Image (cartoon, rainbow, N blue to C red; front, top):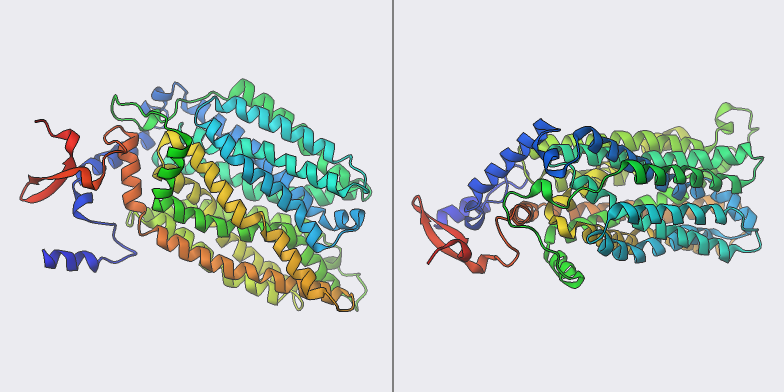
Amino acid sequence: MASRHSVGDATPFLTQADDTEEEHSRGLETKKVDEEEEDDDERGDGDVHLLTGISYRHSFAIVLILFYVNLLNYMDRFTVAGVLPNIEDAFKIQDSQSGLVQTVFIVSYMVLAPVFGYLGDRYNRKYIMCFGISFWSIVTLCSSFIPKEYYPLFLFTRGLVGVGEASYSTIAPTIIADLFVADQRSRMLSIFYFAIPVGCGLGYIAGSQVTKAAGGDWHWALRVTPGLGLIAVLLLIFFVKEPPRGAVERKSERSLSHTSWWSDIKELLKNRSFVLSTLGFTTVAFVTGALALWGPTYLMRARAVLYADQQCDQPICNYKDSFLFGGITVVTGLLGVASGVEISKRYRKINPRGDPIVCACGLLGSAPFLYLSLVFADSSLVATYIFIFIGETLLSLNWAIVADILLYVVIPTRRSTAEALQIMVSHLLGDAGSPYLIGVISDAVQRGKPDSFLLKFRSLEYALMLCSFVGAIGGAFFLATALFIEKDRKRAELISQGLETEDDSPEDRIVVPKRGRSTKVPVSSVLI
């Protein structure tokens, strides 16, 4: 027995899965589960879609519609970032007040996410999303007509936009999870999360280009997405069908039952993979939230410093940094999300801990490149954009993988609540405060010094350096997730398939001889 434990303790972290006596008793069951998932993935429109009553083509069309709505969400959110200097000039506000534009939206989004998560686990998800998107579109349109004397009212309307986005973001991934399994689910989630970088980039581009076309009037930039939101509502009503929750994962006649909201929260907090991956994702939200709002502004200030003593007759001086930053965000997002899914898919075949390890490598790798992008900004914008490109690509590896981790370590009847809790925590400790914090640090550095372009540039540079250190901490959280991911995934699979209940625990198992070694089985499985 001692020798066996010594071998287990020496198990390489990056190459082998957890292997305890308790988990070995489930080995054969899990192997069958994996084989069934592979069969489902190969069949595509076969048995999996017979269970949902929705064909493969229809299911794929639903994913595309959800992608479109997610695209609009992020496009609207970052249109404001693309015209932030215009908003600062219009309302006569400082950096710390500018950071509040994003913060009030995130706070509203964060607070309401648990409400819609609770509703999404119990009621028709399609109609909840229709209500949220309609509300979001109306409020966004109204915010574009607020005069410059009423900045608090503008902040209030940006906060109300979070109501619509909370109703959508907590629910849409769970619909995809109820339509697909295994590798197909990962692929569809990657399509869905392509909308994040593409939407962000289009937001920057639309904000700057529509404002330019409107003769410098930034209000028109906020009037683009509401009309597209109406199209999204019509697509949801007429083409999206609500799939049954957990049907594609159930392997027995035992159905999953809903528990109280407080019971759901307590079970989620016991799930170490969920908690640690949520903390890791929180650091991703912190970094992306800060860079998303302040990135274009920082690059504009760097350009003003770099070309302060030169006539602006070179092509590079005429480029719009919001446009460039938006284009980079689109390309790096597509490349990062696709690469993350493909790398994790291949690495998972040799290491079941592959998903959190890929996330950790992405965060730890992005930190130094984001730092270098700040350091080189006052000497070479070309080098800065190259480092931003590499850093954002590595940062984007996480998006679809984190969503997939949540879906396979949490049972179907609890997924919307889990999405909501993850959103609340990641925004509360992440991008709800990071834009404002960056602005506060920047203002603190400037305080008491003569105003100049160089000072504004340096103060924002020092503030944004915080992002690199936060990203490194996130990598550590994902490495910790890798220690528990295998056990938590197996347990969620067995409960989802009706092969085990949540009341079954290691303490409730008894030891029965099996081929010369002990095996633990649930007490309920033994007939007396």
